[in-house]
Length: 55
Image (cartoon, rainbow, N blue to C red; front, top):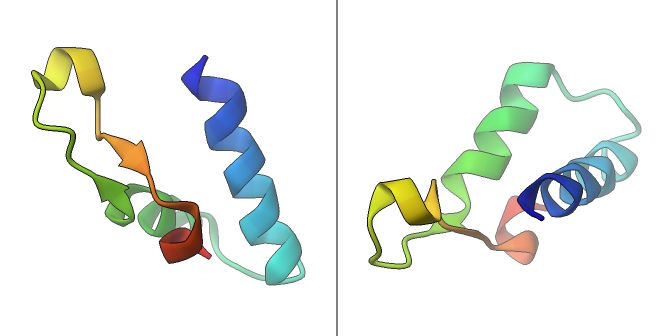
């Protein structure tokens, strides 16, 4: 279920920056905005993406 949410947020970021954001900056924006859920990394991955922070 995480994949559709991840790509939807990525689409919002691309739309905001008129698709002029480099791919590495897009990935960085998504991964650095994640909140640690304090679970095992195998269960949570990077955590919960904070949409407002990513934008």
